[in-house]
Length: 469
Image (cartoon, rainbow, N blue to C red; front, top):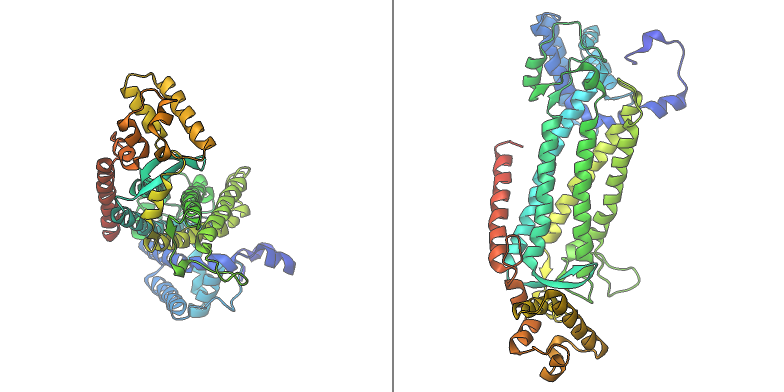
């Protein structure tokens, strides 16, 4: 059944039929289609566009479809239709007869699909927030469990300065907390009702859109009917939020892939999240993390797809907008799965604090501390920087570390070298403890960050329990 067939004669090209259908993917909106239609039928009854008997018949038919869909998880396997809306109306007519034709009174597929997509997006955001909370919980747990572990910090992937491993984990906690905030902002923009906007110009029937918004759980009504039916900014918002989630998870994955190599061995993945080689018996590959990293590319590609899709569309609705669903569904599904897996990988990670600590002796990570100590002796920092740089060069040329230097060797380059400077040069703990400014890696500051992180996570969990976003 076509919802628009009266204007046309003859059959359409079968290839075009296949090319233009969206039922194969928008059928996952079935629950939202039924929800919106039920609410709309009740509204049509309230404003007396439907009789009581018609409201009863339509409601009975829609509820029968809902039961059918719930009882048959593979309900759509052998079904064909132009889209999910057409399928519902055709099925409804089978259930209750010609009165099904009154379902469309005063509405269009344009405002219907916009409303359903927003309802889907709201639920999707709630799910993403829940899954993000799982990763945050895992990061916080590992940070609390490994508070004293010292990790070589890197810039340009070269040894830089020692940091607490907990400080490192909390940096990803901050990234994902921003993702949570971004998703919450996205939810607020999604939370408005297009229904009642018709195809583009609004409806001539006395629909109470405010009441309909309350019934469907929307915070407000879309103010402009032309914009309401063609707006997909909220899809871009959500795909962008998913993209940044994936960027952050990809960076975390990249770090752990590097840190888990035997050459470093800072962490080890649980066997449940690694695979082996069909040829090399010794291999333990971080495939979960590699796949998260690769799937980030697909979500980012979807964002580009959406922006390109919208950039040249004339107002109002255009069929191009059908393409938003696959991008949106894929971004949400991918980000959701990756959040769950990332949380499990982090939660089961074996942390090798001994190997981290041993690695801090390589790469002269305390060089900046030595320069700072020289400044405290009254030496200008630029001069101190130069002296320590020459000392590092001396060690590199002779395959030595700071710990291998004799007093005479060190004084040959830094005349004021003494036992205090020597202790500073070999102590990662001392380096870490001196970073006491707010946000630094000193133990007291990291304790403060852990407390803040715990409060933030608890607020998120409390909101979820209370049904708030």
